[in-house]
Length: 115
Ligand SMILES: [Zn+2]
Image 1: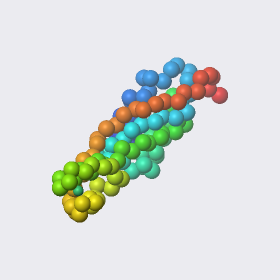
Image 2: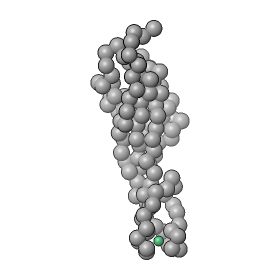
Image 3: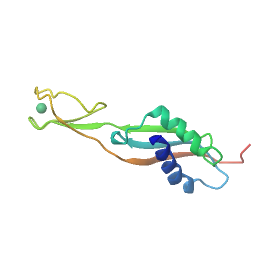
Image 4: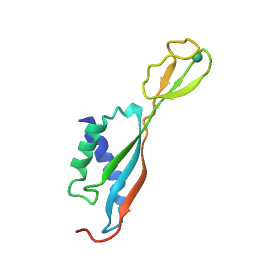
């Protein structure tokens, strides 16, 4: 599963940043559309790769970066959740540009002893 390797890469990115003895409540990431992530599969993979690590039980919040659509006819540019859209000017084939970013946005840590 494609999401599994992405979740693994994310966990590798986040784990060194977890303070010793801390429990992580939530990890927020920004993911570009070009990554083609299925959020449900991603959540399952995240739970699988973080099991038995200091990230176990941490929620994964996914902030998906939408497509940027630009119209070659009128020069308009906008963002959309879908890569196919029609421009207001009537151009049926504006160009979608997706991002492939995968960035850690924030990590919410709960200090204290694990129970
Ligand atoms: Zn247009």
